[in-house]
Length: 447
Image (cartoon, rainbow, N blue to C red; front, side, top):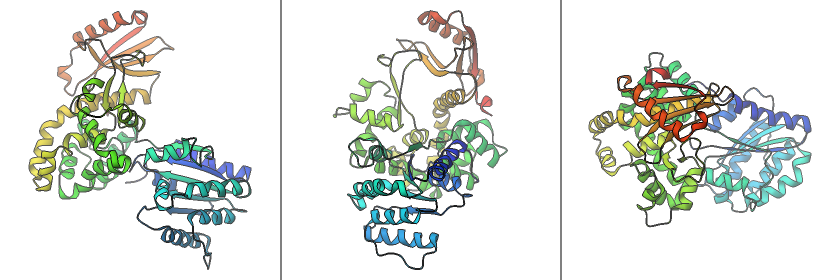
């Protein structure tokens, strides 16, 4: 699959290199994003045409510091065409050496999965602080620290107690693709794709670049082919991603986080419902899941954050799919027994119900991405009797649009939506004199 999107992120990275060139000082930048979102590919793309030395240094927690240093020095010798490598014993000394090589010529150095250096050498970041502070003003290095364990990366660069706090010139958060890019990918790689194919790919991948790439390379960018691929021996890698993601991000506490996610996926959307299913106090766990965008805490639009109307949902579309169709024990047992046809039939029979929330999510994201809408959300009343899938607000024109998402357009009832809007306006009479529009939101509208 060719490279898609990321124009703003590429320009941001290139601007940091331009600052190095213009100011003749080093810059440190952190690049953060979930597994498989495309951080490394983005970085490589940003600098592919830059006439500067480019170092890519990878970190694995499974190697010793001596082996890591040797691998890094081999790469440095290759890029800088050095006949002999210096005799260095620590990773921080390697960075000092790179900064000396960049004394006269700008250089880009990427340390990928840099958070793992804390396992390889616990004192690395303290040592790097010293090296950086002494050498940044007399070298021309763009040091890009990239990592996929978001919690560790946030702590490394944003916690005041950490050595690198305040050293970073910028932080780039790489998000999954927005609906417009997902649509471009699907229609470019599969021009015959239908609306339900696009919606299914969105629901299964959440816009994560590597997941989209796998389905594209396997020519499985349709609803049926994607399901058949995921529930096959070849789809094992994609099925395992949920387990690996939780194990990497939450490690010792992975089981607790999994229990909370399963509770929300199974319909526990209110705090007391989720808490009642756990023996532990869930406050800290819930905040962390929110911070790293695995769950979202939603309020009816225009409600204050203190409202008791808050609802929780799985924010990561891939994780929502994984929790529904891969993670449950009976489905794991079928996969272990290679009962692929049963899994495919089960997923196909349940998938329409699953796609309903995905359709709502698509439209809310799409409205936010384009058009004049300043705020986009959903609304429900205190009793839960009335609920509106989409409320989009354009205050400059005093315009507000209400939408009801339906997989089957024949089930859309404009009179029923009008009644819900009347209830909304009773709760928010200040919008009664605005221009009001109402519409059904169907899969055909996403193409």
